[in-house]
Length: 467
Image (cartoon, rainbow, N blue to C red; front, side, top):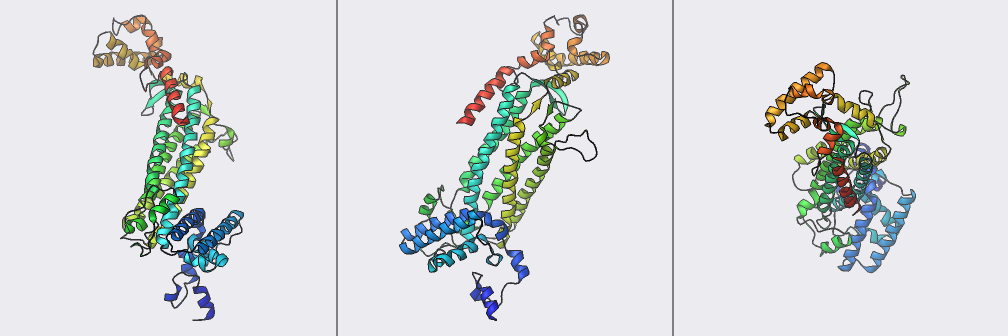
């Protein structure tokens, strides 16, 4: 082998076994440093905890430990300053940092890898990184909920046509409608908090797959890193990516909820509905039609939901055929995971701001509710309270609606004498029942749409979100 090849091959951690260097094509194909360098802080944090434990166990000298701490501090400064040189030849974030550490502190840098493998190292790094991202995403979910609660409180009395099958069904408070999304995002936050416990477990010490002969104190490292425990089986520790799949599944649900809300914002902003307006900074115009104002942010979020769903499917497919333990396939876990986090983070931030600038058009909402005979069920309930069976009342009201449609008026606009033709028990008090406001106020039950209930739910959410 030429001296140049020998020099090139020294960049590889396994080079002594091989008689020729990796080809440039394979190097580019297998390298991950371009995307996994974002794990640098987790890598340094995990390495420092590992070094502290090795020193406590008498495996590493105090002098080497001090040198490692000093070198890692400099590497951190270089990365933060943007002066650290990431090298493709060194393949990934771990070997780049280890090589620079060895440059800075000599043999102590090589001793740091005692008792660990890149298999358990990368699994630890990804968990540490994801734990931090989950904490940030949970805060962003809180911020979006707060923004929605603020709008809901201002619109507790605003009447919106509630839909089923996208047909006008019953009047609801616009605030009540928005609080439905608060419930969804609250469950999303609960899922994030719950899965964090499973993310926050330590693989380090599993080494390549079988554990190590060094007397490591894995529980000490877990405590140092603020983890809730250690992975109990070395094979599972290095090969498990359930935590990444579970996170991406939870992220997918968040995006599904975002997408559902996006669809409504898009519909509501259209001229056919005209219920709301989005601030100009969240929209674009047309290159050919000067009158257009397009809701690009919700449309793009709806599209990005498919992207995140795809990442979930990709991760599941990635894992389905892998035998124990670690396989190179697992390098492919990072890009979908990273992109899921980036997409979700940006989406939550922009939606919290966008909802805070929402313009509501109550008159348009109320006109739409009047067009759909939204109080028909209220008339049926009125007759039930007069002694009719609900099915009989339902049929009577259907005839009344048919008459109202034929004359082009709302039920509340039919004369009392006309209504009494359908049932003599109908009296003048029916008109309060048939009003949109009366319908809204009548649903004064826990979880109902009456404004008093909306305000109670707003108060409950504010207390929960401020805890």
